[in-house]
Length: 167
Ligand SMILES: [Zn+2]
Ligand SMILES: [Zn+2]
Image (cartoon, rainbow, N blue to C red; front, side, top):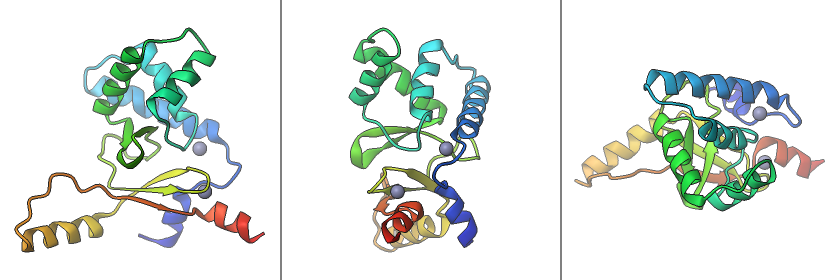
Protein backbone atom coordinates (compact mmCIF):
# COMPACT_ATOMS: atom_id res chain seq x y z
CA UNK A 1 0.00 0.00 0.00
CA UNK A 2 1.26 3.45 -0.83
CA UNK A 3 2.42 5.48 2.12
CA UNK A 4 0.03 8.36 1.47
CA UNK A 5 -2.90 5.98 1.31
CA UNK A 6 -1.96 4.34 4.61
CA UNK A 7 -1.55 7.71 6.27
CA UNK A 8 -4.95 8.90 5.13
CA UNK A 9 -6.60 6.05 7.06
CA UNK A 10 -5.78 7.85 10.28
CA UNK A 11 -7.41 11.23 10.16
CA UNK A 12 -5.78 14.48 10.97
CA UNK A 13 -6.79 15.84 14.30
CA UNK A 14 -9.13 17.65 14.40
CA UNK A 15 -10.88 16.80 11.17
CA UNK A 16 -14.31 17.50 9.81
CA UNK A 17 -15.93 14.36 11.21
CA UNK A 18 -19.39 15.44 10.01
CA UNK A 19 -18.35 14.42 6.50
CA UNK A 20 -17.23 10.99 7.80
CA UNK A 21 -20.60 10.59 9.53
CA UNK A 22 -22.70 11.57 6.54
CA UNK A 23 -20.68 9.33 4.21
CA UNK A 24 -20.98 6.41 6.66
CA UNK A 25 -24.72 7.06 6.94
CA UNK A 26 -25.14 7.03 3.22
CA UNK A 27 -23.25 3.75 2.88
CA UNK A 28 -25.31 2.24 5.70
CA UNK A 29 -28.59 3.19 4.02
CA UNK A 30 -27.39 1.78 0.71
CA UNK A 31 -26.18 -1.46 2.35
CA UNK A 32 -29.51 -2.03 4.09
CA UNK A 33 -31.46 -1.25 0.97
CA UNK A 34 -29.35 -3.54 -1.18
CA UNK A 35 -29.83 -6.41 1.26
CA UNK A 36 -33.55 -5.75 1.52
CA UNK A 37 -33.18 -5.06 5.24
CA UNK A 38 -34.80 -2.28 7.20
CA UNK A 39 -32.68 0.40 8.76
CA UNK A 40 -35.09 0.88 11.66
CA UNK A 41 -34.89 4.00 13.86
CA UNK A 42 -33.23 1.91 16.60
CA UNK A 43 -30.64 0.46 14.22
CA UNK A 44 -29.97 3.93 12.89
CA UNK A 45 -29.54 5.32 16.42
CA UNK A 46 -27.07 2.58 17.32
CA UNK A 47 -25.22 3.10 14.08
CA UNK A 48 -25.04 6.86 14.53
CA UNK A 49 -23.72 6.48 18.05
CA UNK A 50 -20.92 4.26 16.76
CA UNK A 51 -20.29 6.35 13.66
CA UNK A 52 -19.82 9.39 15.90
CA UNK A 53 -16.21 8.38 16.40
CA UNK A 54 -13.42 6.36 14.84
CA UNK A 55 -13.10 4.24 17.99
CA UNK A 56 -14.73 1.03 19.14
CA UNK A 57 -17.29 0.74 21.91
CA UNK A 58 -18.35 -2.18 24.06
CA UNK A 59 -22.07 -3.00 24.17
CA UNK A 60 -22.49 -1.61 27.68
CA UNK A 61 -20.72 1.63 26.90
CA UNK A 62 -22.99 1.89 23.92
CA UNK A 63 -26.06 1.36 26.13
CA UNK A 64 -24.91 4.11 28.48
CA UNK A 65 -24.30 6.51 25.61
CA UNK A 66 -27.70 5.81 24.09
CA UNK A 67 -29.37 6.33 27.47
CA UNK A 68 -27.85 9.80 27.67
CA UNK A 69 -29.64 10.88 24.51
CA UNK A 70 -32.89 9.02 24.88
CA UNK A 71 -34.82 6.38 26.79
CA UNK A 72 -32.86 3.53 28.34
CA UNK A 73 -32.99 0.51 26.08
CA UNK A 74 -32.99 -3.15 27.00
CA UNK A 75 -29.59 -4.73 26.30
CA UNK A 76 -31.26 -7.33 24.09
CA UNK A 77 -32.64 -4.64 21.76
CA UNK A 78 -29.21 -3.12 21.38
CA UNK A 79 -27.66 -6.53 20.73
CA UNK A 80 -30.28 -7.23 18.08
CA UNK A 81 -29.63 -3.88 16.43
CA UNK A 82 -25.88 -4.61 16.51
CA UNK A 83 -26.47 -8.02 14.93
CA UNK A 84 -28.38 -6.42 12.07
CA UNK A 85 -25.69 -3.77 11.59
CA UNK A 86 -22.96 -6.44 11.64
CA UNK A 87 -24.89 -8.53 9.12
CA UNK A 88 -25.24 -5.52 6.84
CA UNK A 89 -21.48 -5.03 7.09
CA UNK A 90 -21.70 -1.42 8.25
CA UNK A 91 -20.48 -2.20 11.76
CA UNK A 92 -17.57 -4.49 12.54
CA UNK A 93 -16.57 -6.28 15.70
CA UNK A 94 -13.20 -5.70 17.26
CA UNK A 95 -12.80 -9.23 18.56
CA UNK A 96 -9.75 -8.59 20.71
CA UNK A 97 -11.67 -6.05 22.79
CA UNK A 98 -15.18 -7.37 22.38
CA UNK A 99 -16.24 -4.02 21.03
CA UNK A 100 -17.93 -2.63 17.95
CA UNK A 101 -17.11 0.13 15.52
CA UNK A 102 -18.79 1.74 12.55
CA UNK A 103 -17.23 1.06 9.20
CA UNK A 104 -15.66 4.21 7.82
CA UNK A 105 -14.01 2.41 4.94
CA UNK A 106 -14.98 3.73 1.56
CA UNK A 107 -15.81 0.47 -0.10
CA UNK A 108 -19.08 -0.83 1.32
CA UNK A 109 -19.98 -4.39 2.27
CA UNK A 110 -16.60 -5.87 2.79
CA UNK A 111 -14.99 -7.91 5.50
CA UNK A 112 -12.38 -5.81 7.26
CA UNK A 113 -9.05 -7.24 6.24
CA UNK A 114 -6.70 -5.66 8.72
CA UNK A 115 -7.69 -3.53 11.65
CA UNK A 116 -5.17 -1.19 13.20
CA UNK A 117 -6.01 0.18 16.62
CA UNK A 118 -4.18 3.07 18.23
CA UNK A 119 -3.43 2.15 21.83
CA UNK A 120 -3.22 5.83 22.72
CA UNK A 121 -6.41 7.39 21.28
CA UNK A 122 -8.33 4.27 20.32
CA UNK A 123 -8.69 5.31 16.70
CA UNK A 124 -9.36 2.41 14.39
CA UNK A 125 -8.38 2.19 10.75
CA UNK A 126 -9.21 -0.61 8.38
CA UNK A 127 -6.47 -1.30 5.94
CA UNK A 128 -6.52 -3.49 2.88
CA UNK A 129 -4.04 -6.28 3.51
CA UNK A 130 -4.23 -8.70 0.64
CA UNK A 131 -0.51 -9.58 0.61
CA UNK A 132 -0.65 -10.34 4.34
CA UNK A 133 -3.80 -12.44 3.90
CA UNK A 134 -2.24 -14.29 0.98
CA UNK A 135 0.86 -15.05 3.04
CA UNK A 136 -1.30 -16.45 5.86
CA UNK A 137 -3.25 -18.58 3.38
CA UNK A 138 -0.04 -19.96 1.87
CA UNK A 139 1.46 -20.73 5.26
CA UNK A 140 -1.72 -22.42 6.46
CA UNK A 141 -1.81 -24.50 3.30
CA UNK A 142 1.83 -25.50 3.69
CA UNK A 143 1.10 -26.64 7.24
CA UNK A 144 -2.16 -28.36 6.24
CA UNK A 145 -3.80 -26.07 8.71
CA UNK A 146 -7.43 -25.22 8.07
CA UNK A 147 -8.10 -21.61 8.89
CA UNK A 148 -11.23 -20.79 10.81
CA UNK A 149 -10.60 -17.17 11.61
CA UNK A 150 -7.60 -15.14 10.74
CA UNK A 151 -8.10 -11.96 12.65
CA UNK A 152 -5.68 -9.24 11.90
CA UNK A 153 -6.08 -6.80 14.74
CA UNK A 154 -2.92 -4.89 15.30
CA UNK A 155 -2.27 -2.34 18.00
CA UNK A 156 0.17 0.49 17.83
CA UNK A 157 0.37 4.26 17.93
CA UNK A 158 -1.18 6.28 15.13
CA UNK A 159 0.67 9.03 13.29
CA UNK A 160 -1.18 11.96 14.91
CA UNK A 161 -0.58 10.51 18.42
CA UNK A 162 3.08 9.87 17.65
CA UNK A 163 3.63 13.43 16.46
CA UNK A 164 1.80 14.82 19.52
CA UNK A 165 4.18 12.84 21.71
CA UNK A 166 7.17 14.19 19.83
CA UNK A 167 5.93 17.78 20.12
ZN1 LIG B 1 -13.92 11.20 11.04
ZN1 LIG C 1 -3.84 7.66 18.14
